[in-house]
Image 1 (tube, rainbow, N blue to C red):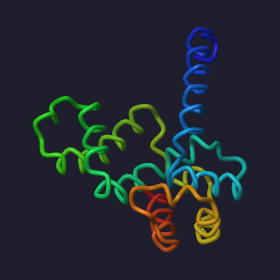
Image 2: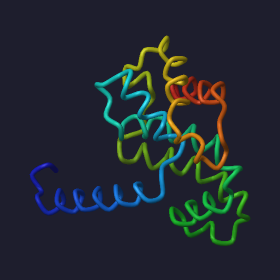
Image 3: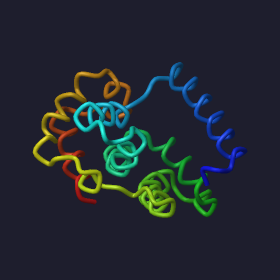
Length: 154
């Protein structure tokens, strides 16, 4: 609700804190991909690009950061407190899918009108940014392209 000033203020504060965190911790693969998409498709907001790429990014990455992804699953669903880390980490990927659907942000690049013939160039541009090297599983250009193709229609 855009007219809710209290909620808008809280979101602004959260955005500021997130920016401070990112400035100190750096970002990973999905941000580099989202920045490359923004460069090719300026009509797409960064958050929309992140929402579109996150499910495939998670499926690509979770096995290289089992503990972190397991923690995420346990935050989303406390029933996973006794599950193995591997099972919880794998489940975190579909939990993000479900969450994005719930908030109306489960988007594909096709939904966002990213031209399919630009995916290769977007993959190339994503590799020009250092963000992909911060990812727990460092992607090759071909792997980034594969993520983009999967995120085109998911």
